[in-house]
Image (tube, rainbow, N blue to C red; front, side, top):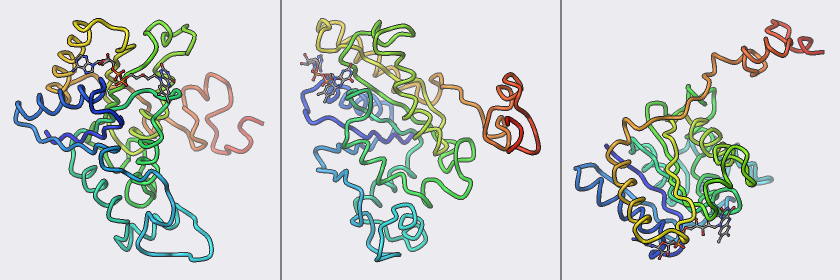
Length: 251
Ligand SMILES: Cc1cc2nc3c(=O)[nH]c(=O)nc-3n(C[C@H](O)[C@H](O)[C@H](O)COP(=O)(O)OP(=O)(O)OC[C@H]3O[C@@H](n4cnc5c(N)ncnc54)[C@H](O)[C@@H]3O)c2cc1C
């Protein structure tokens, strides 16, 4: 199995750092191939602008998706983006390793997605969700969270962790065709005992060895939606479809 870990933490001695080292050791010992993009160590530039491209399609106005489509045709992405795309297309399993920051990805990792998940190459032309470019590959979030698990439970103060990770699991991974592995979560690592932290690292090592069989999240397929992109089953329930004339179905 070829595993690509996009690692997003500025401190090598962090728990995130320990998790990525543990993952690499486990995968390599089992004979798998692993590549890590350590974004801070690489000094990865998260700013998305004309430096994404070595060509210019429209010099008057920067329209990112139009330039991305052109660069896909011309094979003219900047070398730092091209290198990351090559790893994406190489891997069987993609892992985002990150601490939860402000209910989302650290900016450097969000910037990586903004630049690397480019129209024309990674999505576009009807290639999305179960018809996505990366269909057949798997992806997983491995996340440390400052707060404790009850805070992120169904009725917890911060709301369910599944909702917080939805933009990543659904909007990034599934959107581009990945099958999404259930996230690996470590709550409040700074407040755990050393033994509990080591137990999590052991659990993570085990997860590395079952990436191909680990449970996945279930999302509807494109065929489950009607022509307005509303779930057919829900449209029936709320009484506004299905209808061949979508504009008038709910009016
Ligand atoms: C900008 C920002 C925004 C944030 N937003 C949120 C938010 O929205 N929600 C939220 O819940 N939290 C939030 N946090 C908190 C953040 O999610 C946690 O601080 C982070 O997830 C903890 O992970 P870490 O790797 O940084 O842990 P660390 O603090 O680096 O490590 C935790 C403990 O593990 C120990 N450790 C390291 N290596 C090992 C090892 N090999 N074996 C055993 N122990 C080890 C460390 O020494 C330390 O004691 C935010 C933090 C920041 C800075």
